[in-house]
Image (cartoon, rainbow over all chains, first blue to last red):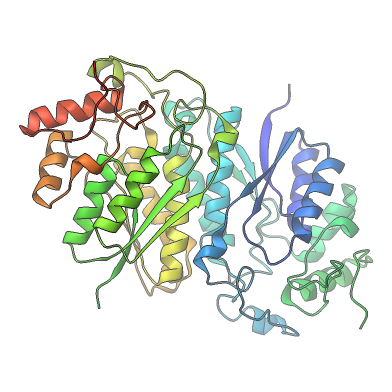
Length: 230
Length: 230
């Protein structure tokens, strides 16, 4: 019987690649998504499609309205920045930062994993492109792993040691795309854009789109996702 | 202007005493409760009443259905144990343990606090009576504090140092009740029982009721909460 792992799946490029990596490592997959008051639902639709494609045992979508607290362009009315250079993106913590997001996601994943008798969690954080997010750094992941071993029954009783897998954390976007492509990820089904149109087509101009398109260019591959006409 | 603090408020004896302590320390109060699929809603009703009594600036109730994951007598159909001795209660991790509960609660509190420009969180955990819960221990609280300083913008930028206040952690139930009584807590409004009747009256027989009643007896005070007729 394969070991179970909970994989955080947003429906984006990074989390989908992470799902493929967990599958490749032989884990039985439990995908976890959040409906956290995103401004659009295309991400969640992508997550559903991808969870099916990768034959996850169970896909749970937890409604969790962090938008009630405000404070981020992803969940409130702050404008999504466009046409920024890599230097501008790396200057400080971005406005698209959602307070405590990855901590909340990992905590809920930990609860589910404990109920499942699992102690492996996969998260697609990346410290290269998103250097401004505090909760995408290796020291954050390490600290959460320590917390999990203190916070849970299995950690305290020593029956299992918790492992937070962040396989993309030191990869460039091009390396992520090459890895996923080798594992059979259909990137046309993934959703990345912060500001899609009503049909879900990507804007090609926000930070997330720019990094994605640069990644495909560097990897020498073609992005099959739908973009808005210019 | 007073500093803001987020206080986790379940509507029980411990969290209400914690709210009173935070008020006494001069913080501006933001109360956070969760609707996490409890088997009854009396706790949340108590939380609303108490938040009003203590003049909190804002009280937010976050719906978060951890019951979907199963695994605890507080959220699923496992029977609540009754008439247990202190020794039985302290033997291992109780069935009323909800996986990752305090980690999830603290994570969401951290997100709200960051949005508010706060870095103080109050939680009414207690390591004396509930020695079996991994996430009620001082080492867990310390670990979460370290995590908060790595997970947040304010922690990383060094503009604020996070503090997880757990003022009850080393107190006996009698000491908690004496402290709260001095600060003006009306314990008749708090809800403790794991298994109340349809009118919300406490059973007097579950672990939580037994510890509460012992606490009042030791403190030499009378519990004004409503109990079911014997």
